[in-house]
Length: 371
Ligand SMILES: *Cc1c(COP(=O)(O)O)cnc(C)c1O
Image 1 (cartoon, rainbow, N blue to C red):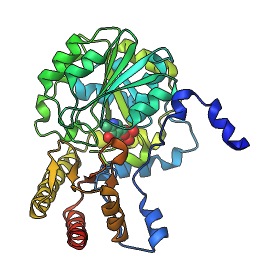
Image 2 (tube, rainbow, N blue to C red; image 1 turned 120 degrees about the vertical axis):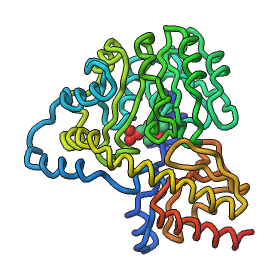
Image 3 (cartoon, protein in one colour; image 1 turned 90 degrees about the horizontal axis):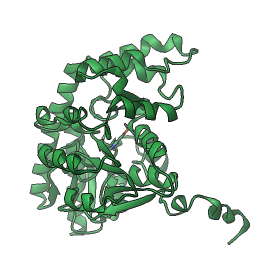
Image 4 (cartoon, protein in one colour; image 1 turned 30 degrees about the horizontal axis):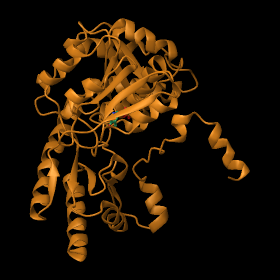
């Protein structure tokens, strides 16, 4: 070990074992590397329509105020979310992306003596926030690529302070039934916090059937997280939120940085909430695009996992990484999922009709060459 590497041995043991989160390749980076100009990115489950007009207008109007600190309480946005969901604003926590809410709950509840339970193939941020505070990740094998709730319940011990559940899950797109989730939460000991990550809930077909918010009444240990990054098209601004009991929100608020949400994010999210037209258009583009990709996979005799989100996992029946790289050379960025223990799959975010078509044509060419 050379001298500079010794620093690794000083890091928290769980951090030494972490593999850094690898984000979707930015368009600018691929441009620099390959000198391509026409690049499409279907790699990070972003909204292919971009932000809505109302959000963009709100951002423009707020620019002259940028010298001032934002409203650290996020009063107006919390009020709007409370109205939307029939909650009290004391039940809402705003985060710098919903990822920050995941980090807040880990910092508030986990210690090196505790563990967090989550599923194989679940969102990559769960081990990061868990191990960053020295706690232990307990990974439960997936069932048909989704969460095995019975096995997860069995994995909960008196050392378990958190359970993370992504519904729909990223990257697999699997969706748990509301009844199985309700059963799980009822059976979970009240010494354990259930984090229900609903980053993609707006895309769920039968969205009216999602009644997780009703469970908050009986479960002070439930934290639901949602985001403006996906359906609302504001990923670049970093804003998400937690819905919970007032007591849980109070705890998260204690560890939160005073100005964690920037002022542009706050006004844009508020405007986006009232832009139902943009949301509906987003959902409709997603539904059509999902159909288009699935038809394309059928034509290529490829299998895919039915997805409730704005992305789909395609099974290439061969290593995904070389196909990912070949797609890059054609200017199409998708997401390899080897770090999720899915080396033969690629995750494709649903794009516009043209983007989906460009991707399918590139994939067709590549597979014709390798087959
Ligand atoms: C994208 C995503 C998030 C959060 O994204 P933010 O941009 O931090 O709000 C959370 N959970 C899952 C499963 C996701 O895919």
